[in-house]
Length: 536
Image 1 (spheres, rainbow, N blue to C red):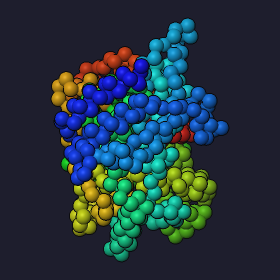
Image 2: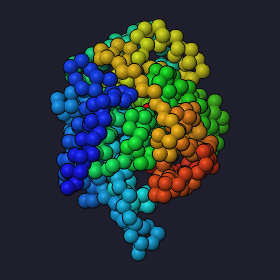
Image 3: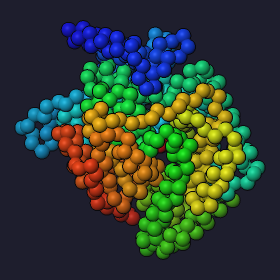
Image 4: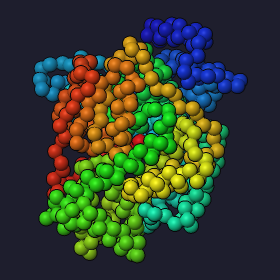
């Protein structure tokens, strides 16, 4: 009966889709509209469901987590063509109230999560229900994670041999020479061609529109009439694309560390803004180190700490630590600290010890982890493919050189590293999408929750303000004077209170709300482990 009812509902949707093509559903030559393809794929997924069983690496996971697969079309305009198998994970709602063992909590459905990237794996997200901050949500919801198309166990995409992905030691010039720029241009061209060679004609189908369509097929496979979704970083962008394409399919949505969805920002200008924001966060980190000069001995001012960092860069350029940590690896390790302030103590300690003659901690933090090369290469391949496919990028190197030379004068810390990460998009061989105008009118979408830290560098705060303007009825909760990239379920109890009230009761504060910052990390504390890779 359940499958028949779903078929009946899907049949009605199909008739509607055949008579009208919504945004993002323009037919391709010889195919259906993408919107019709989504309906067909969702119909199949709803009838089949997800056969959850043991996860492939079950020996490393708690027994409560189960895994399954969902089929999605590579190309939604040809929904009966090549299929991709998305790997999905789930921990069922516990129904246990952590504050009252006698109270059975009613199930509210599935909460689907994406950690961002693009290229991040959400497969281990359901295990977050083991943490105290998530137990109330885990009591009411099945916690569902998945690997998006091309990621991890979901038909992984690759652009080069993973053995060549980690190159260390490497330089990281803040003012690169013309010869170095020519070398990086050649590498970017080769990488773009590697993506095309390995993915073939399917490369064009790794984009945010298809990630949103896949999410609707996943919703149907889970048996959810309406989706409850939480996206972090880039996950907020394609979550907003989903909300624009499928507003009537939304139950509740949380946008954590919201990316600016303005079509003009996707993605070249967003990356320029990100580089500028990281300079401010790098200053925040150095000021924190300076306040704890008695612990680290790196200088009593932000400038003095920068001088210590530059001494380390110069020393590593002359003699890489352990033969594998050069300036590039140092910069990468400290860039991570721009995402999460709980990384600050260990990185400050590693820099301090290195300058005192002990490189072991720096090597452990910054050295390439060869065992993770395949995973890192895959994540980078998906990141590149999605961002390059999503929108037009400047194809003239002179534009990149002009914009980033100018920016590097005031924001040298991340600017050129960001250029090299995205430069394959200048030479991308696949057709580009035109970014969707993310926007919903009054009453089209249920109220949604946006979370943002005021000093977030990876997703600058203006993006959260723009997201709130574009999603009618959305409410923004801001963590003031803080910069952690992604604040849901973290150390700020005020933020968590708003998250719980929304997901558990559908209750939101006024149009905007603010929380005081969480406490700064202690200089002797060890950094908390992060399960999800964050990009945009």
